[in-house]
Length: 218
Image (cartoon, rainbow, N blue to C red; front, side, top):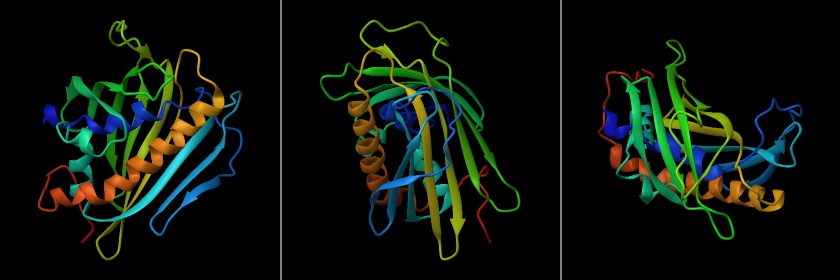
């Protein structure tokens, strides 16, 4: 199991977003929309950087989506600018500390992060929430990378009639180092858009995956 709990981290790594303080504004501005994907942003308190939310609907089971998010060897095939990741510590299915790297676009230096993922499923609605919490001091800094000092967010998986799942990814953070706000915001939006565009095609390879830990709607 521990070799399959990595890709949840990678989207958090690649986004490299905003300062970690509670958001004051509740109004989301849609910045990209297609037939099945919507990417939005909003101001984040005390920061020139944006909080980002992406939502996409995929024709798949909850088990398939979770299997994709947990598949470490496959993450480079669909996660935008994935630089790899590894499990540091895992407690069964429901929690993992993960180290990851993002291949940041020039002129930014590559970033790395350590985050904890906590998984929970509502027994009534079957909705899944995977909370992302930053733990930058869990391991020592790596000389070749800039450690992301602050970030947080969640994955939300909502089963819908007809075999669809609405996938929500919301994240905020501080990329660390010196990066112009406009560049960090642009990188964040591109990361969300391209990764969620890739998710729809990638998830089909897990069509037959079942897990005792994920309950589907009947």
